[in-house]
Length: 317
Ligand SMILES: Nc1ncnc2c1ncn2[C@@H]1O[C@H](COP(=O)(O)OP(=O)(O)OP(=O)(O)O)[C@@H](O)[C@H]1O
Ligand SMILES: [Mg+2]
Image (cartoon, rainbow, N blue to C red; front, top):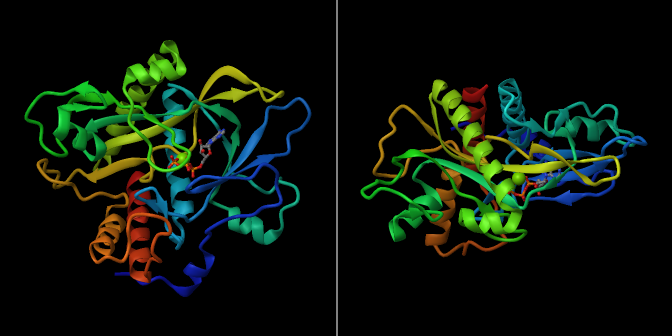
């Protein structure tokens, strides 16, 4: 197992506090408003920190390099999706040299982990596509034979491929767990036309991405997208729908190695399974209760977790 160099750990970014307006903090990303020129639509600086969350708890120890790897993966996928021309996205660029008021050390810290984006009014529904039966989809299937209310054939095994990919929306909870909702509830929340459009987009993008991942030896079991409406210069939403946030990263997706894929059991994954297993051992030992604050992560757990993200970035490049 590769040990973490002290220099790596010192470079890790847990939280940023840049001299920019409108700071917001998600579980992983810090988001700022960028000063906009008169008459121009608003833009955001989206900074992927090295924070990692598991069981919806942000761990107190960052994983050095994770934010850069996530950004690299997202940008690669945005490029691929643009070539398909299915939907526009929020990515403008990665150059932070033109942002006024930042020091050299801040620019160095931001390099590789930042995206300049078009600001959007984000649709408050997470758009999830599932091609395989895992996670909360599998749990629901065991209980009721459905996944997010979608009836499925009997006799499916854990991690089985579904007859066809399904759309399983979820609420975007500000705190705590996202909750799976039925398509009907999504229609009530955002309107039937928009819900149908987002379902079609989600399934099309999932299909194209799953095919590309498969050619790289990975199964894209499921993934989550966020969409939003681009804002105009006055900060009002236009009718232009954009893919926002991160796309098709190991944080937003479940990737499995194609080699050795065998349904009927949990699959080894490139996402946080290694960290989750370590945390579950902490829970079993009575040292943690799946509530904030999370436990400090030892160096070998950080190193192995980073190795997983590095492997995903290498395979998806
Ligand atoms: N173009 C955009 N315009 C406005 N908000 C955006 C845009 N892109 C991303 N966001 C928002 O920025 C935040 C990014 O933070 P982060 O990715 O850490 O998300 P989170 O909501 O805490 O967790 P998760 O993505 O895991 O559900 C999210 O709230 C996301 O909706
Ligand atoms: Mg997010």
